[in-house]
Length: 240
Image (tube, rainbow, N blue to C red; front, side, top):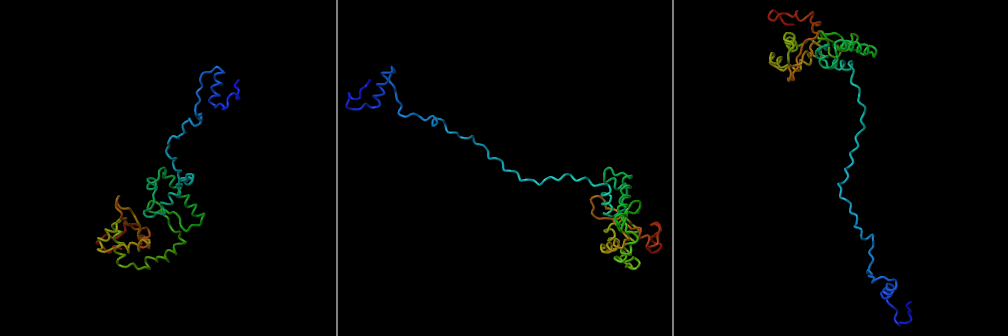
């Protein structure tokens, strides 16, 4: 046992440690100046670089459920409203798959039933081997009030010339009519269409924009003809 009173100076901590080591049978002890912190020895965590997260996609509008395809009646009705040459089952069948002549006739009958039930002023009537929308007889007076009767209108010479060219050479385009007359015929053509004497009888060839015109049943009625074959022969007398 070490008596502290034997020395005037107090032993240093190092001396106390060496004495304790000798007593407990150990060798020389080496004391580190600083005990390292275990946490400090671990390398700092560096996250692995990653690409930035993708930007959120803009929200798209909700997708509406698919609308049902139009019925044959709707398609046929749209074709009739386009106008022009009378609509036939063959023409409609080439434009719409599955629209055979039987279904075409059924669509026409259904449209007329619907028009009667709704009190429409028009119906689908046979014309030139096909069908066309036609004003009911009880409403035809309104058309005469709007556009006048052809007899009352007293067609001028320009209208007679254009109408004659169409009657004898139909289907015919405006460019050919202008070439025959030597002047522009667009205004006269519009007048004759409004009077119901001519209509778009046939589209021009593929790639061409010009339409072709032909006479209507009203033309025959107004001029007292049963068919175009009854037109006077050119050179014999006046065309109309």
